[in-house]
Amino acid sequence: MFFIKSRRRKQKKKQAMAKTATPPPKADVQVVASLLEEEEVEIPTIVLKPELAIQALDMFEVSCDTSTSSDSSTSSGNVPMAPGEECCHLPVLKAVNVDCFSAVSSQTVLYGYHDENKSKKRRRAAFLSATVMKPTTESKLGMGLKKGKDGSLQVSSLSNNPECLLSEAPFQTGDVLVSINNQSCTGMNLSAVGKLLKQTTGVLTVVVQNSTGDSTLVESMIRKPTPTSKTGLGVAHSAGQQIKVSSINPKGPFAESLLSRRDTILSVNDVPCECLMGAREAANIIVSAETSVTVVAQRQSDNAAVVAMAA
Image (cartoon, rainbow, N blue to C red; front, side, top):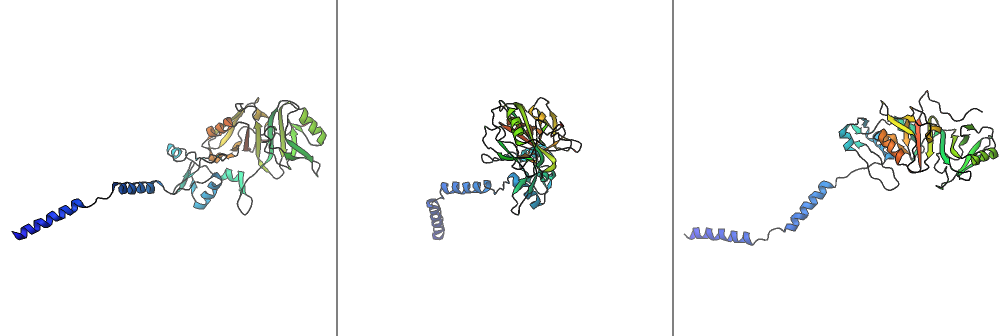
């Protein structure tokens, strides 16, 4: 009996000690749970800007898949950028391919690396145009001209004043003046050109030539009189999933540009078409532009850009 009682006392003593033991605080459990949740959510992610996307393709040696299935459309979307930066559909890196990213051949035509630091430089077209609406003879253009050593008239300066009509023109200093409203400027002196620019009212189209530019490219800018003004430019998808110029309204501002039907659009307002989901998104950029629309296009082999009319 004594042995049994002793065992019972030991059992009661263990039970009493278990009851009096302090349980772990609930707060600690919550902390552990929250830490686990944070570890599960905070997965390291690499977000590439558009200028690094091509390098990533080369680095990981992944192929491109141009399919536009519903799965791919949900897997890559708009990546928010800081104010002033481009918002672009970036590719999603997978094991063997990249979704929603078309072939990079056209982008390598448009962009290249021009120094050992691999800073990106867009290749310029051989011919560039700017079309604006000049209300009065006193309207400021913001473009300076000079006579070059070879006798040609060259762009000497461009104002960045937004009130100047040509402030957003794709011109650069050194570009050679070719025509004004299809009138050839070859052989004209500075005085005659200045007078022509001043006296012209209404639609004004200036065409320049970049001697080192790509002869297969054209670049045209139109300035909208108002943010809601129509451009008269139609875009559509081709069979090869390229964005093409489908139509140009003969009464619209692009009618006097260097663009032609069936030209392949490479960029709209400095956004490469490889970063766009299709023609609809390109159209949205054109419609939503407040002041100007600049299009870089690759001409068809049978298309010829009219830069000036014979006198």
